[in-house]
Image (tube, rainbow, N blue to C red):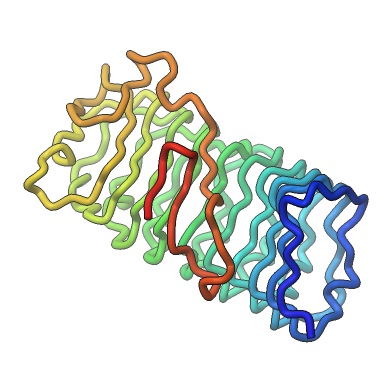
Length: 278
């Protein structure tokens, strides 16, 4: 019986999601990423508790993501990034209680704040909403997502202060807030985020101090910081976007180097060829 169906990066073309593949009773993996598949995502007409990993990233799917996506209630990993999906994320995602990885970045969703139903998805380890027309503020309920390792809301129009509660997320290691409209003082307590490895704050209007991360004797794990050094004190920043024209000028991809072979969990991070974490 078919368990994994991986046709990623095969330069394939098509006009629809092949729904017949869903009839395989033991199928755990569907990976269609990085092809040229078009069409809309179909309504799911029956419950499926077996599928664990679904990646449609880097195609040309259009339309909206249907509410029936929650029929995949055993799903651990959902990646729809880099398509042309519009509308809004369906609230039905909050019923997918096993979902740990949600990548929805680089889609032209309707403008709006981060959906509040995400606060109910407390098992999420990684959330990417970059380049999805998010606005409003970064809400305080983000502090309820205690399992978050990665949060990417870059390339949006989120404004207001960076919430202090971010530093209290115990597992947070990769925080991408760059290219937004954040303003005000960076909240105190940044050093409490002791697992932080990557912190990107550039191209905002934030002032403050990151010198605590520059103290090599403080036991922090951080290895890459990019900020606007004219406003933020940071002697150890890798580059300063207000001083260096090409600093952090490329779109970073949070879903790179993800292998479903490792029990559907992430074992390494590759945001670009230059930014790698083993």
